[in-house]
Length: 397
Image (cartoon, rainbow, N blue to C red; front, top):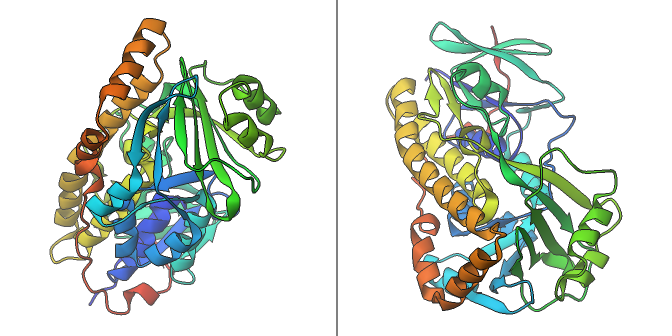
């Protein structure tokens, strides 16, 4: 059988997951990451049942769950601390067979990187060009040129692959707010997590393993701000919020706050062009309000591998991937955007209506509405034989 090669541009969650999945179905993978190492800037993330099913397909779910913490309860509170809605996350597990798990982004990246076969990862090596080359693709990088059968663009919201191959597409746009993310030192925190809604601001917190808490704050502010001490800025903005927010902020170490202007991507008509496919934020960067960014990237990786690992031509496989992922991710992105807009309302009458609606909505209705998102079932990955052990030596062009 002719050995097929995929070059993955970008070594974040989506890129590493794509490499793991494609190696499992018998492809040879090479992952180029321009940074010096494979890591991810950020703090924590939530993995809902659909994300955990994708990780099961990749063979790493048990390792990930061992590093994370299961969130069993949570909900939304208003600026005074009063509960607006409660969610029994144990019911999520009962309905979908898997819990909500929270862990450090760095831990997930490490698990995925360790699952990629030896020799596949190339850090500190930036891809500078991707061009069609006969029936394949030539990938230009700092150290030369390699040829691949398929290129996966997993290089994030400001994707260079998307910019080169989708020149007509609009670039990412500022979502209208900034996010601060942080992880506390071990602290005697609250009994459950929550998201506190303010006027144009939010603050959320959820437990990690080891007594630490993952926290985030958001505010509708102009893009491009920020300073040298983001921890001080967060404490000024949220330090007077209801308990346990002040205590959690006090447990954040110096230099422990990461600030990002949130960007979203206008919907693309297709995630495939020629033998180039986009995954994760490069394809569908969305508002993080639903906590589905990592989950959708993991789904992308599994579906792409299932398509490319099955019989048929590369072109037909990529077309199946596009037909499968486009409608779903665009629907999830729309839903995330709607929730994000409502959560950022700042006009007092609108905030009052929003909070009243949240109090009157039954928890069961919220869980039912999330069913189509959380109930995703991954395709079966074809048996790749010894493909998961293949070395990542791309063919020179």
